[in-house]
Length: 354
Image 1 (cartoon, rainbow, N blue to C red):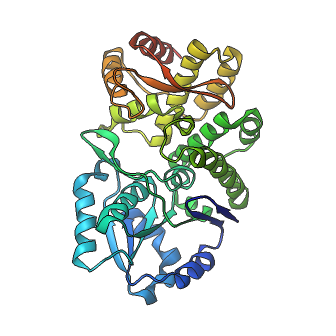
Image 2: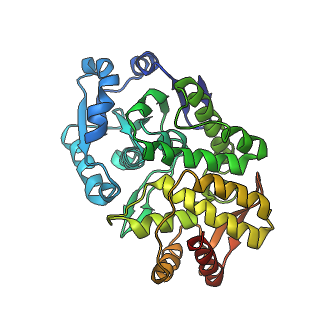
Image 3: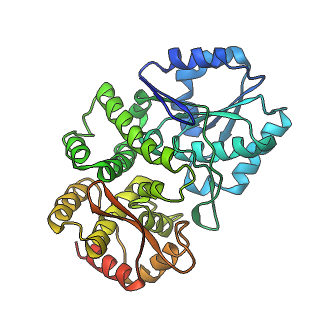
C-alpha cells in the first residue's frame, strides 16, 4: 500500500525488505547512516540489515528515553555525521520510534543545512504520528519538543511487524493517537475503530487502520503545513497531555506520550462540554472507553498549579492566552479556544474525582 502526500511517499507493507530495497537502489546517496537506539539495534535492525550491508553504512546509536531527546544527543549525531564525511547527498535512515524520528529528522534537517533522510517507524505511535507530518525536534529545559523545525522525510516505510517487539503499554500508546484521529475525523471513524480489539488485531488489519489514521492526519497537514490554523485539530488532547507528560518526566511514574494524550483527551472532552457544548452523553461513553484501556493518572491537588504553569509553555498559546483545540462534536473542531485557570482547575478536580 502506498500513500502519496505533498511532501513524502509513505509505504505500508508487511515486506519492508522488498519495498525499501527498491527505493535504496534508486537513490543516489554517497553515504548511508542508520540512526538507532539500543532497542531498535537489537530488535529492528536485523529486518533491514541485509539490504544495507553492501552499502557500507555507518550506524549511529543513541540511548532510548525522553531524557535523551536532548541537545547533547543531537550534538553527538551531528559530530558523527561530520567526522565520517556526511554531506547533502548522504542519506540518514531513522530506524526507531518517535524519539528517533523527531531527533533524527531534526539532525538531518539542520546538518549542512539539510541532508536527505527517511523514516522507518518501529512503534505504533511513530507509525501514525511522529514519522508523518513534518515535525522534528528535541526537548529543552524540561519542555516537550521545545526546539525543532518543520521538514518532511523523503520516504516513510511502515511495517506493522515491527509492533510484535512492543509491550502492551507501547501498543496502547500508539492506539491513543489513532483514537484521537478518529475523534477529530467523524462519528463513523470513531465507531469503526472502537470495534477493533487492539490486543488481538492482526498485522494486515492493523495496516488498514494505520493507513486510515495517516489519511486523517495528512488531510489536516496538507491544508496547513506549518500549523497556523486547521492543523491545530491534531493537537486535540495534547495541551493537557503534554503538561501531564512533562509533569511525570524523569520521575518513577514517567508516562508514555500516548498515555498522556489519552488522559489529555479525557480532560479536553470535559473542556469541550464546558466551552463548545459537546454532548455530555457522548463524552461519558468516550471517557468510559478510554478509561477502560488506560490507567488513571495519580495527580495530587498540590500539582494543579504546576500543570497550569506547564500549559502556559504550550506552543499553541498566543501572548497570555491559553489556546486549546476542542470539539463541538465528533469531527467538528474548534481551534484556539481560550481557557482560563479556573477552567483548568475545574477540569483537574473533575478528572481526579473519576
